[in-house]
Amino acid sequence: MVARSSEVRPTAVRHNASPGAGARRGRRRAGRLAGLGFGGAALLVLLTGCDVGAAFGGFGWPQGGITPEARRMYDLWIASCIAALAVGVFVWGLIFWCVVRYRKRGNELPVQTRYNLPMEFLYTIAPVLIVAVLFYYTAIVQTDVVKTTRNPDVTVEVVAFKWNWQFNYRDGQGVDANTTASVLGTSEVIPILVLPSNRSIRFEETSKDVIHSFWVPEMLFKRDVFPGSIRNVFEVSSLESEGAYVGRCAELCGSYHAFMNFELRVVSPENFDRFLAAKQDGASTQEALTAIGEEPYAITTKPFETRRTQDNFNQGSAPVGAGS
Ligand SMILES: [Cu+2]
Image 1 (tube, rainbow, N blue to C red):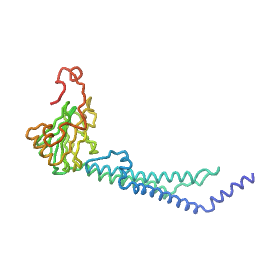
Image 2: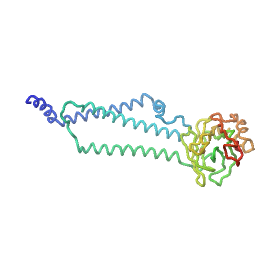
Image 3: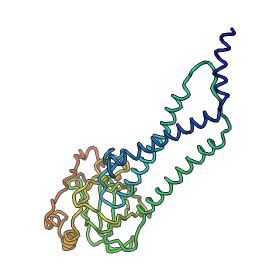
Image 4: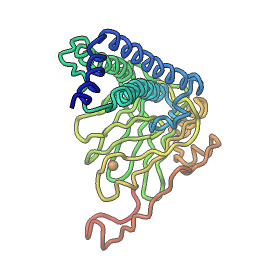
């Protein structure tokens, strides 16, 4: 009995003898751990060069955006992930430090800390600061991505309908502008939206029936296409790489929603002007594409077999098969 209490007492005495020194030691270790966490994150950035995103597969975000807006959204995502990882490493470090430092050493209850004002202040203020910083940069990038200008170089009207697309090249903005040339998709031919590189482009969206969504994955951007008087508009300041990109409808709009593909063909500004001139002279989209040395038909997607027959589609009323 006596022996047991004498075993306990030294521990109790050690705990009570210099609480300040223990706390200082703890703070030093926590500081060291935090330093290690931030050092690790900095090392990570250093080792992988500036392109951390590519090294980690974009942290799940699609890579290969072809517009400055896409790159800004991508950069925001990568920076947010790095910030989240830095906070995560710091928190994980503290957790593991606590697990080791305060592991069970006997039956005695450890020192109980309550109402630690600096600590409570820190874990209230720190998350608010983190959210404020994320909000600030998100608001800046979002404003930049959705901003429109007075005089874009090209204005194209995107008309969605069940289940295809029409692209109208316009001579101005809004519903009152005139269409100078047009591309219409059919069940047999994928519509090709030809646009120039290195020019600003304004997309004005409208739907003939239900809600669709205009989506080119490489723009890292999609916007719903509404029927009626709502005309959704967005702009890209430049398409930076020439090539062919698949476009899709990203809003479940009916039975053949998955078949609503189109192709974005980015060509040089000179070739775009020639394409448009040929269209305005009455050439078909395929003839105009051939005239500028481009593939006349879509190369990123192909028309789907709709399996429409008189028996299973619009019975007894509309004609079957191709569009117009
Ligand atoms: Cu659709």
